[in-house]
Amino acid sequence: MDNLQEYLDRLDMTRMPRHVAIIMDGNGRWAKQRGRDRSEGHAEGVTSVHRAVEFSSDMGIGYLTLYAFSTENWNRPQTEVDALMHLIGWAIERELPELLENNVRIRLIGDIDRIPEEARRKLLNSQSATAHCTGLTLGMCLSYSSRWEITEAARILARKVKECDIDPENITESVFADHLNTAGMPDPDLLIRTGGEERISNFLLWQIAYSELYFTDVLWPEFDKIEYAKALLDFQKRERRFGKTSEQVAKADDSKVGN
Image (cartoon, rainbow, N blue to C red):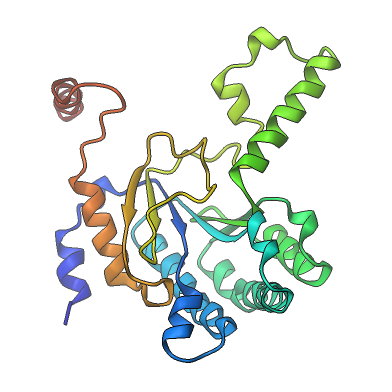
């Protein structure tokens, strides 16, 4: 059996990703494999969220963004959607005291107005209650799709151009990013997807332009701290060139060491 400490001993705490994003996939399949209702898989997934938040904080990761409910998920059976909305509201309310104790700040990302009133109220309350926290920022993508987000940003900028608040020539990548839901957050260094699928599913398409991608067959309810540590170890083996050559990266690293 794997031992968490063995993985922790191999991690370089000076080379942790600043921002980790996770596509939490496999709740339904986890439940189906056990002859249970899909809603039970989602409930079990809440435990994995708790572990991921705790481990991210322990590892000094500044931002953790979770794909909790996509715009496309509204098309699922109504009974499942209702159960998910109830679960999200219940879970955030239950976790709030511990989030505050651990200095975790909630950041809601997505078309939150579409969330049913009771769950929306609990989510907004948690965001407001943790606004002063300075530790881990927990981004929760709810009723979210990247194409929706990019379209919204384009629409806002179009209005500003129409109202002469901004010159089209002054719309840079940075200006555009400032109009996304994630404004003020660094781009993810590492994107993890559980559940065996190897696609992005309309998640943070603008922001992950240079993210390292890590896919695992492990279903989200079984994604524990050891599995998270494995993803971090894999990340630390990557050479992040950002369009440069390996020699340029090595030279820049040597320069940092010299300073």
